Figure: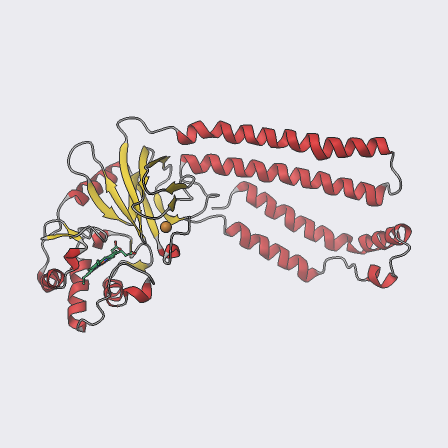
Length: 380
Ligand code: HEC
Ligand SMILES: [Cu+2]
């Protein structure tokens, strides 16, 4: 998953630190000789304290850069793009990095020139030229080029998807994500904390929030967009690679801000169509083991807050649970999706997600909690 540019940077860092070690003896002599010539007043003890990099420092540098580069991949990285928008943003980033390295080399080159190669007094005309050219004209030009490049990307990133594209509303809740698909025919289909997308098709997401500001961000697919109460923001994206990616809230929104994640599953179009068709169906009839759990679900008032289509459960406060068992994770990305996790969630809700807007049911007997977990896991 390594990007060629990061690999090159890694190579350069390794080369530089090896070079530093080889040349360090000569460097030290040059440095001290020059230092004595230039700054008679500096006590020799201080000059002696300027040491070339040690072997261990080079090793640390190499390991640090390997670690940094490895961090550039994975399901939640803007530098490992799997969507059109993210690809363009990553390209802009790499241009910034490449030109910044060039400028850095230029500045260090000038410092070496002025300090070691030609120390001494320079003509004030040349110095003025350097300050005006390098300090004002060049940065203005360079930043203007970058600004134009960035602005030129905007229309493409903000253009809506074609009229007949898939439309999805996502609402940022405290602290989870309400997701609603709007198929061209039929009722909207609601789920939570998971967005599935067909690969290679542009999709329009309409982002909203009922109370506080969140920021919707799937780093691998495109840039982030705020969810602001009282308005609907459109975000268009197109996934280019199948896989499972991570989404997060990128704006502090309250106690459990760091615990509201979601999964984005990018699928082949046929698999996606089959999945959506399944999500539109009401909950399957519970198997024998789960029937007791279903009864408890209705008795204990879970249905006041949760909808399970096909049951007398139409609550709107919490996530739609009709197909909760088929999701990648539980509790907005904080637990795996298995019976143990369901039991933990229902019994220790507040402990798992401080500030959560669901009461915990840890006072129920163990058998009841187990029955509830089996019922929930069976809602596939
Ligand atoms: C007062 C409203 C309320 C009641 C009552 C309630 N819940 Fe919840 N529930 C919520 C909210 C809100 C969330 C979302 C919490 C979050 O992730 O921040 C939630 C989340 C869940 C989830 C995770 C869903 C997902 O998509 O990951 C499950 C499972 C669940 N509740 C089961 C239950 C069960 C079982 C009961 C009854 C024993 C119950 N809830 C009672 C409000 C409620
Ligand atoms: Cu948030």
